[in-house]
Image 1 (cartoon, helix red, strand yellow):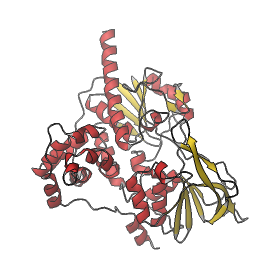
Image 2 (cartoon, helix red, strand yellow; image 1 turned 90 degrees about the vertical axis):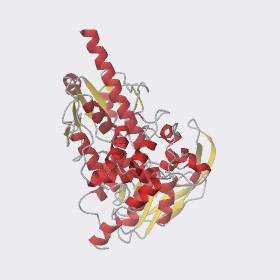
Image 3 (tube, helix red, strand yellow; image 1 turned 180 degrees about the vertical axis):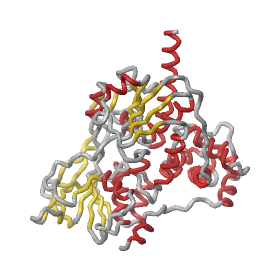
Image 4 (tube, one colour; image 1 turned 90 degrees about the horizontal axis):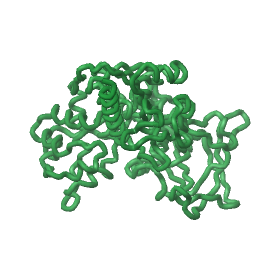
Length: 449
């Protein structure tokens, strides 16, 4: 597969609406006064308002309405499960079909991107400073709101570029990097300082942030994929799904996967991304192994359907037992065992157990691990924050941690029955964190006046 074909494979798969299509769709909206779609949106976007602005051809006003509520609204127009949220709540479901809210959101924000619009201004400086660790959806949202309220905000980002998951962790053919870069620049233009290639806990101690800022926001997300703890995991050809997707987001797409047989372990959205990336990199055969059934998988339904369209094969009730090498350190197969589901565990999900004597071997040139992500425990503990296995304990109204000066939002607070792992919920948590910090610092200033 040549370079040009590889690049075509990673271009965005769905075209946006034309002007005519967008206006026609916008005019289908009933502009409900008590719109259920607003209630279904985690960030509370005024959906009837932004759609009505499209109908009247006020596209900048539409984009501003979207981005006011959701600082990563351009990304969310592509990756948010709208069919399960706002579109599911649309009253037209009872008569015809729901308004294409996600597509209309993309139309407005794409116009703003293409026309290089700056939608917001920084507030008058109030003399207070906030440090934000991590520049993903939660961190950017917190920074945007704080800057609009007059805070001097500094974001510390370990990677070379800001944007977190939206920049590095979602496949380009669903979310081009240019969209994430525009959202980052919307925040940067509010005089927010973004210090990339800066890892807190390594380059700068956590205590320096605690001493040097009025408040700290921990929006660090999650880390690498955990180990499988099976034989052969050290072989060449075994990949971390997060890193695998990340390598397709650089300037040069890898070409070594053409013709290969790839096996992905896990059935979440990242597993789907790894599998569909493999197909677009030229893999001849791609399988997903999952130890439970389709009903228990955590991937969105539209992600599953997309993978099926890409001819990805799903092997349900199948778990890896060992990765087989060729004696020269390279993967040549994976030994699996069939599973069966028993009674539900503490998390409410039925537990998979192996079926004795059901082992079999699948040929494979590469194995991609996509079984979740580990937590940044060392950094959480350097801040001395209360947590449950790396899930930072917060007040769910204010996102304040056990240290009153530190707040946390996004994936770092997801899990153990706390929160929901979606880009849109991370954005909302970032906003709420900013408001809580503002309220606390105003209260503190009044008490000390």
